[in-house]
Length: 271
Image 1 (cartoon, rainbow, N blue to C red):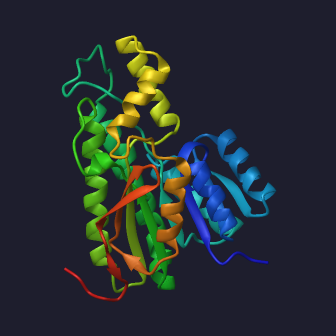
Image 2 (tube, one colour):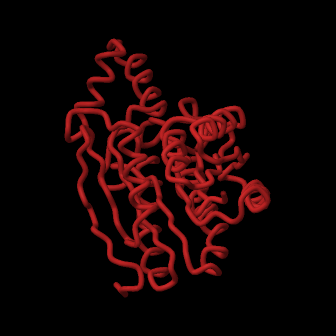
């Protein structure tokens, strides 16, 4: 039986992306597990299939337009053009506002923008023509609470996520009468490998225990708990299944969420 939807999930080889892939597989979508980690993407695709779903790994580097083009050719051969897109690939590196060259040999702002903003934009704009031709598409951007507020020592990350959210708001307005919904989730600190890296940095720089560092990050969340990857995946799956566009959901941990922007039904003009 052919899948009703073809879902492309960037950064699908681990962390939040892996859990999203599993959830979309259970929803009956053909899941394209995309990322640079070929081994991780293959493992996740195998898990999707083992659970009774359909999926395949897809080698894709969001910073490389040629890689994106090749990946979409492979996607069409495997399952057809994606009509669901989850832009999940991202990086987060802590650094002072103005990092010294010895601290950061690469420009942290260019690097974060290239992956977190331009990477998501490149993939979105690559899949969009087929969505417009079909008159149907669902896009969920995995932003961050850092798209809604600032945090010390992650200025580059916050700037890139603010850019992604602003772009998504504009895209939702531009595409509102064309059948393509653009929504976003903004999780606070998630119990994921990205947060593990933050924990390791805190341990290294402060001498705190790993447990104390993890508890400190959890305390930064409004709920006092880390957001689970399952919470993020569930919010994403809800947005993919809806006919609303322009929605922004803040995930605060402990199962809680805030509706930053409610969005509106596709076809109902706003702005």
